[in-house]
Every structure is written in C-alpha cells, then in structure tokens.
Length: 96
Image 1 (cartoon, helix red, strand yellow):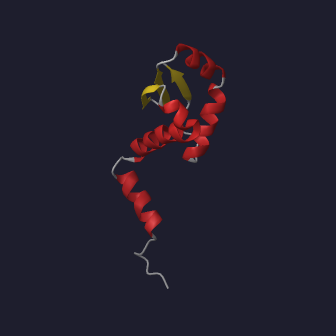
Image 2: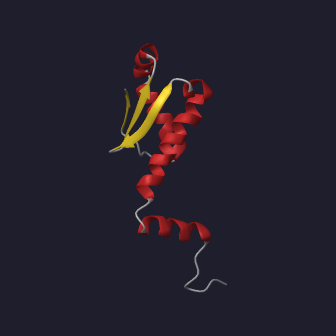
C-alpha cells in the first residue's frame, strides 16, 4: 500500500523538471534530437547549425537547393518532429 507522501519515479522527475524550469530546455533538446532522428545521417552532412527560439526550429543548411526543397515539406517535417517529442511543441521550422 502506498503512503500519502510516496510518488512513483516518473512523477518525481516531472515535478523536479517543472519546479526547476527545465521543461522548455528539455523540449528544445528533444526537437533537435527529433530533427536528427527523422532526417537521418544524410542531413547531418548538410546541417551546419540547429537551434530553437520561441518554439521555432531554425536550421542552417549549407545547400541552397536542399533548403528550397525542404521548404516545400515544412509542415510534414514539423509534424514528424512534434510526434517524436510526443506533444505539439514546435510552431514552425525555418531554414537558414
């Protein structure tokens, strides 16, 4: 039987993350990991820099042609990364 002051480990970790204001940074990290996971090793060669600011994923690519092609599939990429995260976090993807 559980005592009133006992919680499972998942609840304790979620509480710790929320209380220390780390939820946003963890989601940003997951978004970056989602880009690498969803796009594969091929894209690592073309990705120069990647960061999240105000729920927008910014990706600096070294190929203008690839940047143009990816702009056509922005909504699909956004959906894939949000699915990887497990919730709707990102609002947009910008290719620089």
